[in-house]
Image (cartoon, rainbow, N blue to C red; front, top):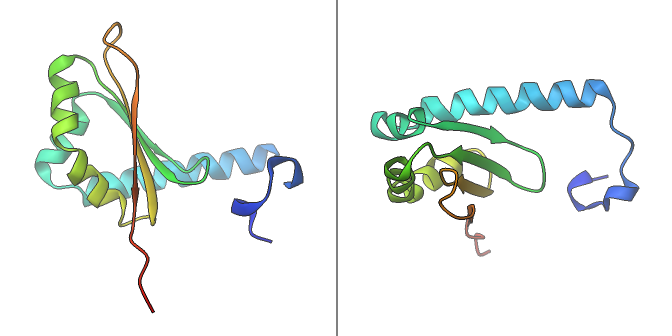
Length: 117
């Protein structure tokens, strides 16, 4: 059974081992993602808080911006971030949280085009 296409009520109940494995997977992907990025992209990421999560239906990069300058730099690097993320999954999201008081979060989805037969 493919759990990605099951309704939540049809899935088996989660347990602490599932949560631990989820955290370990997220931490491993976060490390590999950072190593895959070029030096400039790593520098943009390092200026604020960020992590990669596999919860939900797509791999998601969450970035918490510390100030307006960082928010602008992250927006300028969106296509690079999407390119690096697509190396790990065919459908990825980038969610950006602006500094406190500067608006609402932004989420973009990147999908790898389907190959024609």
